[in-house]
Length: 519
Image 1 (cartoon, helix red, strand yellow):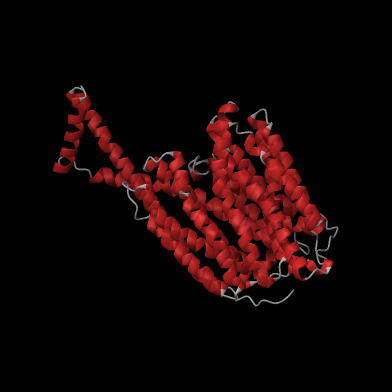
Image 2: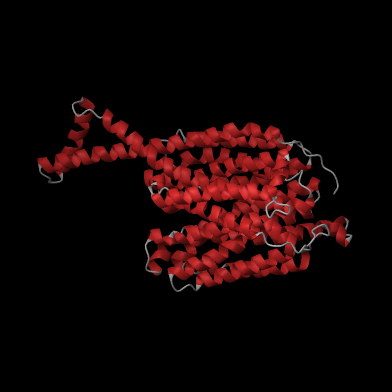
């Protein structure tokens, strides 16, 4: 990209880092907004006279349109130009955000969220493609470290920001805060981002059949993943029908794209061994990451009864440490450390952190979560930067937009699978452990009798008669069983997530070691 302007030395360096800041602002804007909305659903539901279940469509609608547009980003950039697409995405996302803030009813909010999700889907792959093109291969580690810091900080700060704006002002301000950030991003992108000469804008026709199959397949899949547990999965006829529709549409789409002369999604890029391995690893990485992001706050609040603010604070060490160590990972890559070794080591260290969570119990204090998160956060710092750099290393620059759109989709799918499967296993394993624990409770054993007697005595001291106190004592024992079953289910899933990390770690060595060359 720099050759077009004949920049060199300090001017080239300045230009590169200004572009990095411009694209990071664009990407962070979307992450802050989407993460902040999660904490405001109860307020949105109350203010718009709807139930919380109905309000969850505010999240689902965004995810559906976001998932559909992600794989199309490369094609759109090749037709309209990367700079133009980014400017349209930032402006469109901001306008949709403002409309969301002024939405008078839940219906209009969901409609505007669909629009917002479509523009938001363009931001992540486009900004990453621009960043990778702007920096020469030997400096991409530093660039991805800076980009990664922004990507990590946003999900940490967004819930805090969203909670403050919602409680002290209004949930509508979650959408309005995009305006100043987008103005800064638009100015920088307009002034400093330019399309490289190899990005040829061609008047390719729109592949109506391909787009149709993609929209139907990903849309149906996202609804299945988001609503499956709530509807008891395949015992629900409409979930089963959507799952069949998603499978058939996506299989047909893959076949169609592989046979097309000018495909909209360049699935043939998966022929590059490093890129194909990276896409597979991305699905599992974000499966584990988002599965743990779902589990930890729930474990802290629902099982250990931590206040929401305590759970929020003690979930932050992982992200903070990742953010702090990412620049070090970039420096090591710049010094020609083997990125595969850094990535493999980061995965193993992270897996130890996840496994550590499986040794917690019902007496865990906030401090019990510190060292597992320190380990996981430290490991992830040496995962994200080399992973983002090495995965696209063999991809020609002219194909970079298509590659980043595929990796962005793999991240989203991994995150959706992680959240859905973790939520499902949490409920199913709790039921299994509950039935086992109930069967192990012997009403004639001395231990059970002593526990019942202790509860009954406490209730009778409060003025309750013997019969009522006996029933209440049985209720307390059952509560203990439920709590223990819940704890055991959380620990089971943490072990499963650890196993997923360990199993996929060797995939790293299928990737080719990058050979830095000047583009």
